[in-house]
Image 1: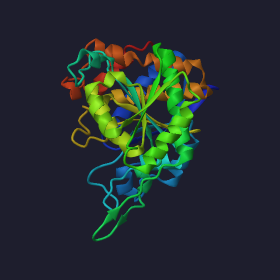
Image 2: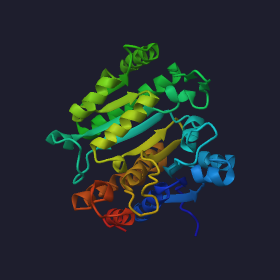
Image 3: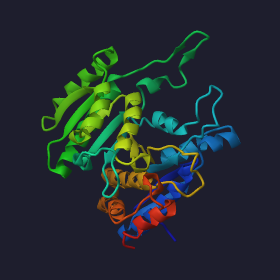
Image 4: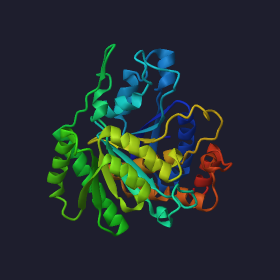
Length: 362
């Protein structure tokens, strides 16, 4: 059967551990959704990750990278395995290679309290948590990946922040806050997370954000030191909107954000550049539950919703945006009693996918 004229090619990299399980569950949910909205999604499954490295000596072949780079979007499960490491002792992480090689500077990490899902804080306002960490994903301390110096007496890594990337990150963050303001009916706020009181690099970053802020007078702008932000994400997370930050800070705060809303199983993400994007759950491969059918696929399903929204913005059409919105079926499923194992329930990966798919008309 010929593919629809509006077909979009999706490179699917399930990866390792529960990555393969949550990816399969998400594709099962996307099937009725694509049918309902007439989406042309053409999937190509590609192998990469720690077990690929173990078996072939390469975590992601050049052929796989080229196919992924030529796709309209990339959907990734999770990659890495504690016992499989490179010669320097680091874990296998080809997802980082995708970020660097495709210049995916904006790591978008939304955190939202879902109906029926327990949150970490007793304050009733915690049900209003709806914020986005925008993690710069190509430089910062991660610039030093594979560049660090280690001697018998010293180890040294280098943090790098450039004007070009920081300007892109700032514009992306202010644009995102503007979009969210239109959807939520309130003024958007960008709060830069840095350590500008100690490091020149962060004072440099803060200055660039202040310059860009002048072009977005409708968006409120401020800054927070990272240690104070860690405190306030526990004290009053419902007061924040869009939080751009350096790579390592974003990596750490993202896990804190997930903890607030029920855990990593509810934390989707996207790494977005000017022309490419990768969509994946923020969690890892969870070796302790891999192969047991217990993994929560919600983060991957919500990452797929982000993918459909991004494709719509890139010109795929309103049907893609409508389909992304319909993946709010996740909310309805949990509101009606879906309880995955990570929040103390008995619903496994397949059951969770069925519960969401059942709320999507065929």
